[in-house]
Amino acid sequence: MTRRYEPIFNVPAVVIAVIAACVFVHLARVYVLSDDEDLEFLITFAFIPARYGSQTLFSGELPGGWGADIWTFVTYAFIHGNATHLLLNSIWLLPFGSALARRFGTVRFLAFFAATAAAGAAFHLATNVGSEQPVIGASGAISGFMAASVRFAFQRGGPLDLLRGGDERSYRVPAVPLLAALRDMRIMVFLGAWFGLNILFGLGTLAMPGMDQAIAWQAHIGGFLAGLLLFALFDPVAAPQPESGPQPERGPESGSGGENLSPPQ
Image (tube, rainbow, N blue to C red):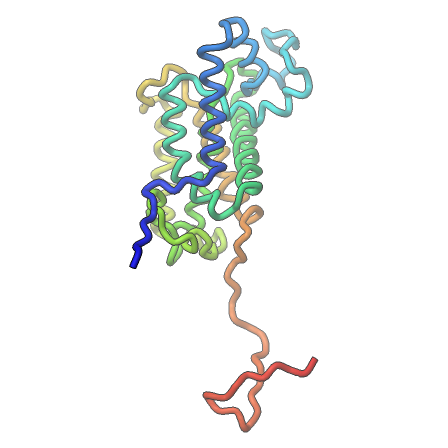
């Protein structure tokens, strides 16, 4: 009898593709682009709140025009400040991104990535109006994946250990409504710890090792809230329905072991 062994890391292809895209962008910036070209690349594809203000040192001459006003809400997520930044985001993306990819599939996964990245940028914009500091990194989208994962990972039969290759059905357990999920003490502890850490980052109490630039913690919070609230719109797994409605009647001749006959067509 042949035993079947599951791989320790069973990562969906779309997650590998997103990480590969981030690695490609970083390597191109480091080894291909000159300093001037890299600066132009950042101004074109990083998210810069000053794009949307009337007063800016850039004097409205940012490359990309109105198109960059739109695409930078997502493209900033593929750019990272250094190798440490890229490595940390990749490590977090592997478990939480894999959980969502197995549940959502490729198309929904990519759409959810774009939606949570955009929400992170929008929240950062709302709290940093006119800032000329570029925002880069996939942390906003990854925060959205974390929030979405808690909507089903703690359910009975859910994938509590996201790094192990388990039964694929564990990633498709029905998720309870958000208000019901917020009554789960495990989820509330997770939310409290997550928001607490990001508040400490915002206050400057904590710092990421190997990170020179400031952490855009507002983008984390925006992405997280979007993941928590938008999950149901993307989730392909039907929510559990209470048993209600009329039950099929049994004739007097039907006993406990009788057959359920279909009505004539």
